[in-house]
Length: 123
Image (cartoon, rainbow, N blue to C red; front, side, top):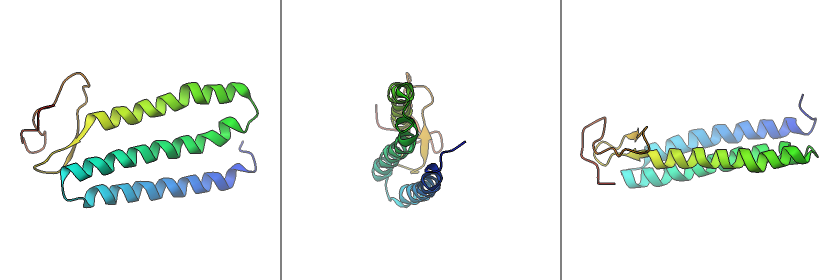
């Protein structure tokens, strides 16, 4: 059951989430080269993590329960930051076809684009 003060926050959260999703998709898709797509992808991932943390903070910290606040700060925040870092570290844009790809194995490097076969710069 949600507290009475949470209903407007939830509505604002989903409006911001939808705005961020459509805006980041449009910004990344409209960039002319792979370098600017990479920059905007990283910015949108950081904005997404900040939105998630800002949405969870009122519920964890305003409950008055110190255990909830400690769990939020020690578990939720590092997990969200790790997931964002992992997405940023394993996602790249090909300079030839400008498509986004992900390297699923963090310990191995991808040397060719899986879409067009273009040789990627050495990592």
